[in-house]
Amino acid sequence: MRLNNVGNARASLATLIRKREKDEIDDADYKALVYGLSHLLAYLKTEADLRIEERLEALEKAVNHD
Image 1: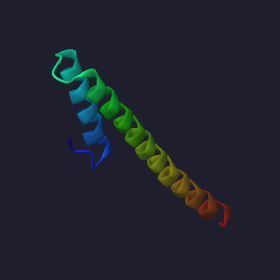
Image 2: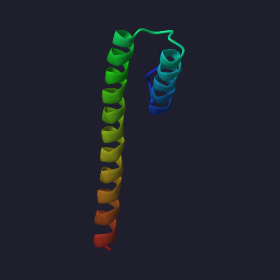
Image 3: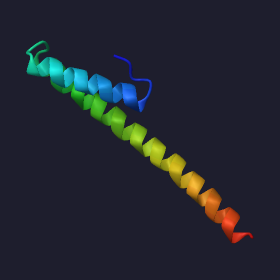
């Protein structure tokens, strides 16, 4: 599994779902991996949201000082 960015993490999650549908992975492994991937994706989303908020604050600061 490649989990180095949001796109790869989503692709890994999709792969897990497809494998589970084909009974290629057992329930316990599937649940554990999906749980971990869900938390990783939530963390990556929060990280991206914080970067956007920082950029917005910088823009607001620049506009307000003119």
